[in-house]
Image 1 (cartoon, one colour):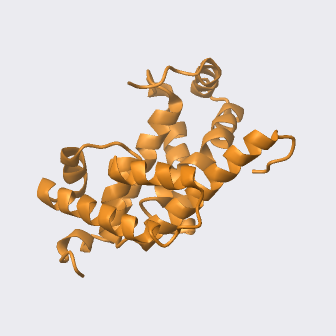
Image 2 (spheres, one colour):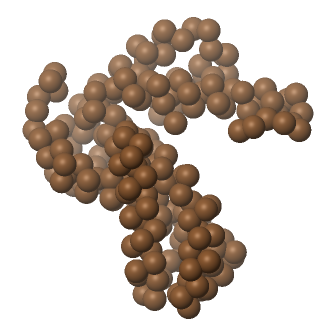
Image 3 (cartoon, helix red, strand yellow):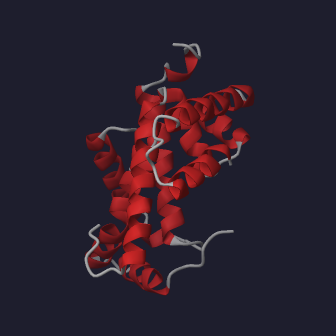
Length: 202
Protein backbone atom coordinates (compact mmCIF):
# COMPACT_ATOMS: atom_id res chain seq x y z
CA UNK A 1 0.00 0.00 0.00
CA UNK A 2 1.40 3.41 -0.97
CA UNK A 3 2.05 5.91 1.84
CA UNK A 4 -0.41 8.79 2.12
CA UNK A 5 0.63 12.10 0.53
CA UNK A 6 2.47 14.55 2.81
CA UNK A 7 0.40 17.79 3.12
CA UNK A 8 3.56 19.92 3.19
CA UNK A 9 4.91 18.28 0.07
CA UNK A 10 1.53 18.69 -1.65
CA UNK A 11 1.87 22.43 -0.96
CA UNK A 12 5.36 22.39 -2.44
CA UNK A 13 4.07 20.58 -5.51
CA UNK A 14 1.27 23.13 -5.93
CA UNK A 15 3.77 25.97 -5.64
CA UNK A 16 6.10 24.27 -8.09
CA UNK A 17 3.26 23.87 -10.61
CA UNK A 18 2.84 27.64 -10.31
CA UNK A 19 6.47 28.06 -11.34
CA UNK A 20 8.10 28.67 -7.96
CA UNK A 21 11.66 27.39 -8.05
CA UNK A 22 11.99 27.68 -4.26
CA UNK A 23 9.44 24.86 -3.95
CA UNK A 24 11.59 22.66 -6.15
CA UNK A 25 14.56 23.49 -3.91
CA UNK A 26 12.60 22.35 -0.82
CA UNK A 27 11.75 19.07 -2.51
CA UNK A 28 15.34 18.67 -3.68
CA UNK A 29 16.77 19.28 -0.19
CA UNK A 30 14.49 16.66 1.36
CA UNK A 31 14.77 13.90 -1.21
CA UNK A 32 18.11 14.23 -2.99
CA UNK A 33 20.16 12.31 -0.35
CA UNK A 34 17.59 9.51 -0.35
CA UNK A 35 17.64 9.20 -4.12
CA UNK A 36 21.43 8.93 -4.09
CA UNK A 37 21.08 5.86 -1.89
CA UNK A 38 18.36 4.37 -4.11
CA UNK A 39 20.47 4.76 -7.22
CA UNK A 40 23.76 3.70 -5.60
CA UNK A 41 22.36 0.25 -4.85
CA UNK A 42 21.98 -0.28 -8.58
CA UNK A 43 24.77 1.88 -10.03
CA UNK A 44 27.52 2.10 -7.38
CA UNK A 45 29.37 5.08 -8.84
CA UNK A 46 29.08 8.36 -6.90
CA UNK A 47 29.40 10.73 -9.85
CA UNK A 48 26.88 8.78 -11.90
CA UNK A 49 24.49 8.65 -8.93
CA UNK A 50 24.64 12.42 -8.57
CA UNK A 51 24.01 12.95 -12.26
CA UNK A 52 21.06 10.56 -12.36
CA UNK A 53 19.49 11.95 -9.17
CA UNK A 54 19.78 15.51 -10.50
CA UNK A 55 18.14 14.39 -13.74
CA UNK A 56 15.13 13.19 -11.73
CA UNK A 57 14.61 16.71 -10.37
CA UNK A 58 15.17 18.33 -13.76
CA UNK A 59 12.48 16.04 -15.15
CA UNK A 60 10.20 16.84 -12.20
CA UNK A 61 10.50 20.55 -13.00
CA UNK A 62 9.88 20.04 -16.69
CA UNK A 63 6.73 18.03 -15.99
CA UNK A 64 5.52 20.22 -13.12
CA UNK A 65 2.34 21.42 -14.85
CA UNK A 66 1.14 17.89 -15.64
CA UNK A 67 2.15 16.15 -12.40
CA UNK A 68 -0.63 14.13 -10.78
CA UNK A 69 0.91 12.36 -7.77
CA UNK A 70 -1.59 10.46 -5.61
CA UNK A 71 0.90 8.45 -3.55
CA UNK A 72 3.76 9.92 -1.54
CA UNK A 73 6.27 12.11 -3.34
CA UNK A 74 9.01 9.89 -1.93
CA UNK A 75 7.51 6.84 -3.66
CA UNK A 76 7.14 8.75 -6.93
CA UNK A 77 10.72 10.05 -6.90
CA UNK A 78 12.13 6.70 -5.82
CA UNK A 79 10.47 4.94 -8.72
CA UNK A 80 11.74 7.64 -11.11
CA UNK A 81 15.28 7.24 -9.71
CA UNK A 82 15.24 3.47 -10.03
CA UNK A 83 13.96 3.72 -13.60
CA UNK A 84 16.77 6.12 -14.48
CA UNK A 85 19.32 3.77 -12.94
CA UNK A 86 17.91 0.84 -14.93
CA UNK A 87 17.89 2.87 -18.14
CA UNK A 88 21.51 3.82 -17.46
CA UNK A 89 22.41 0.16 -17.13
CA UNK A 90 20.63 -0.73 -20.35
CA UNK A 91 22.46 2.04 -22.20
CA UNK A 92 25.94 1.66 -20.74
CA UNK A 93 26.11 -1.97 -19.69
CA UNK A 94 24.01 -3.83 -22.20
CA UNK A 95 26.22 -6.92 -22.02
CA UNK A 96 25.87 -7.31 -18.26
CA UNK A 97 23.06 -9.86 -18.38
CA UNK A 98 24.32 -11.71 -21.43
CA UNK A 99 27.34 -13.20 -19.66
CA UNK A 100 27.39 -16.45 -17.76
CA UNK A 101 26.68 -16.71 -14.06
CA UNK A 102 30.32 -17.43 -13.37
CA UNK A 103 31.69 -14.73 -15.26
CA UNK A 104 24.77 2.53 2.35
CA UNK A 105 24.38 11.14 12.15
CA UNK A 106 25.31 12.60 14.56
CA UNK A 107 24.33 11.10 17.96
CA UNK A 108 24.41 14.14 20.28
CA UNK A 109 21.54 14.68 22.74
CA UNK A 110 20.29 11.10 22.56
CA UNK A 111 19.52 8.82 25.47
CA UNK A 112 21.77 5.80 26.14
CA UNK A 113 19.05 3.49 24.83
CA UNK A 114 18.59 5.57 21.67
CA UNK A 115 22.37 5.65 21.22
CA UNK A 116 22.56 1.86 21.37
CA UNK A 117 19.75 1.53 18.86
CA UNK A 118 21.36 4.11 16.57
CA UNK A 119 24.73 2.37 16.80
CA UNK A 120 23.13 -0.95 15.93
CA UNK A 121 21.33 0.61 12.97
CA UNK A 122 24.54 2.18 11.66
CA UNK A 123 26.45 -1.05 12.20
CA UNK A 124 23.79 -3.00 10.33
CA UNK A 125 23.75 -0.58 7.40
CA UNK A 126 27.54 -0.55 7.13
CA UNK A 127 27.80 -4.33 7.11
CA UNK A 128 24.90 -4.67 4.71
CA UNK A 129 26.29 -2.13 2.25
CA UNK A 130 29.74 -3.66 2.43
CA UNK A 131 28.25 -7.10 1.82
CA UNK A 132 26.21 -5.85 -1.14
CA UNK A 133 29.34 -4.30 -2.62
CA UNK A 134 30.99 -7.72 -2.59
CA UNK A 135 28.24 -9.29 -4.69
CA UNK A 136 28.82 -9.84 -8.41
CA UNK A 137 27.16 -6.99 -10.29
CA UNK A 138 24.27 -9.01 -11.67
CA UNK A 139 23.47 -10.41 -8.22
CA UNK A 140 23.64 -6.98 -6.57
CA UNK A 141 21.30 -5.35 -9.06
CA UNK A 142 18.72 -8.14 -9.01
CA UNK A 143 18.86 -8.58 -5.21
CA UNK A 144 18.57 -4.81 -4.61
CA UNK A 145 15.55 -4.53 -6.89
CA UNK A 146 13.93 -7.43 -5.07
CA UNK A 147 14.70 -6.38 -1.48
CA UNK A 148 14.89 -2.56 -1.60
CA UNK A 149 12.39 -1.83 -4.37
CA UNK A 150 10.19 -4.86 -3.57
CA UNK A 151 9.71 -5.76 -7.21
CA UNK A 152 8.43 -9.21 -8.10
CA UNK A 153 10.60 -11.63 -10.03
CA UNK A 154 8.45 -11.02 -13.08
CA UNK A 155 8.76 -7.22 -12.78
CA UNK A 156 12.54 -7.45 -12.45
CA UNK A 157 12.74 -9.78 -15.42
CA UNK A 158 10.70 -7.34 -17.52
CA UNK A 159 12.82 -4.37 -16.40
CA UNK A 160 16.11 -6.09 -17.20
CA UNK A 161 15.02 -8.11 -20.22
CA UNK A 162 16.00 -11.48 -18.80
CA UNK A 163 14.09 -14.59 -17.74
CA UNK A 164 12.34 -15.13 -14.41
CA UNK A 165 14.48 -18.23 -13.95
CA UNK A 166 17.63 -16.11 -14.23
CA UNK A 167 16.21 -13.74 -11.61
CA UNK A 168 15.55 -16.66 -9.26
CA UNK A 169 19.07 -18.00 -9.80
CA UNK A 170 20.65 -14.60 -9.16
CA UNK A 171 18.68 -14.06 -5.93
CA UNK A 172 19.57 -17.54 -4.68
CA UNK A 173 23.20 -16.89 -5.52
CA UNK A 174 23.12 -13.49 -3.77
CA UNK A 175 21.59 -14.95 -0.61
CA UNK A 176 24.24 -17.67 -0.48
CA UNK A 177 27.09 -15.17 -0.88
CA UNK A 178 25.60 -12.75 1.68
CA UNK A 179 25.26 -15.52 4.27
CA UNK A 180 28.89 -16.48 3.71
CA UNK A 181 29.93 -12.84 4.15
CA UNK A 182 27.85 -12.56 7.32
CA UNK A 183 29.76 -15.48 8.85
CA UNK A 184 32.88 -13.31 8.74
CA UNK A 185 31.22 -10.78 11.10
CA UNK A 186 30.76 -12.82 14.27
CA UNK A 187 31.76 -9.76 16.32
CA UNK A 188 28.45 -8.05 15.45
CA UNK A 189 25.83 -7.60 18.15
CA UNK A 190 23.26 -10.43 18.35
CA UNK A 191 20.45 -8.06 17.34
CA UNK A 192 22.29 -6.99 14.20
CA UNK A 193 23.07 -10.59 13.27
CA UNK A 194 19.44 -11.62 13.84
CA UNK A 195 18.13 -8.75 11.71
CA UNK A 196 20.57 -9.36 8.87
CA UNK A 197 19.82 -13.08 8.84
CA UNK A 198 16.10 -12.33 8.66
CA UNK A 199 16.55 -9.70 5.94
CA UNK A 200 18.78 -11.86 3.76
CA UNK A 201 16.46 -14.83 4.03
CA UNK A 202 13.16 -12.91 3.88
